[in-house]
Length: 162
Image (tube, rainbow, N blue to C red):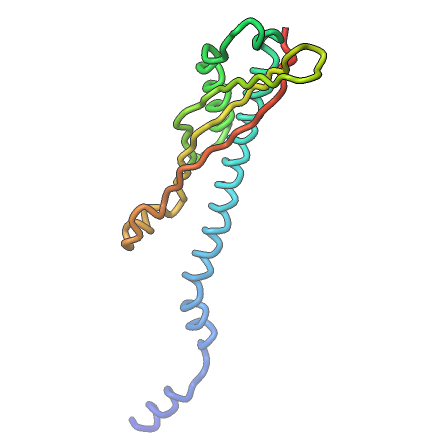
């Protein structure tokens, strides 16, 4: 019986399988983080693209004389919110992890030596909440609110509208 135990203890067949079994969970975790991080960046770029599209839309529909006429861009907020949210949701198979909290249009009038007396600049700012893919695990492990970040994306364009 002692010889058999001694042979079993010195036998190295299957050692690679044991090592692989020990490393496999870590490799799967790294792979999942890479995939989910890529999806998160894709979603963020989609929101940034939506803000850019909303700014272009606002620059096109706002009248050129909005500064001299004393106009406002607050009436376009619903349309701009729809553009940004549509771009953020997109055609994704899974939820993106980014939610658009609010979309705010802005107008600035710069005076100077332009073709007209004032140059209107419109801007769109979207407030976002980014929820990381493994936020549940982070909060379960005692990480608190490390699973979410509140940020904003903004863009500006000169009005060349009607």
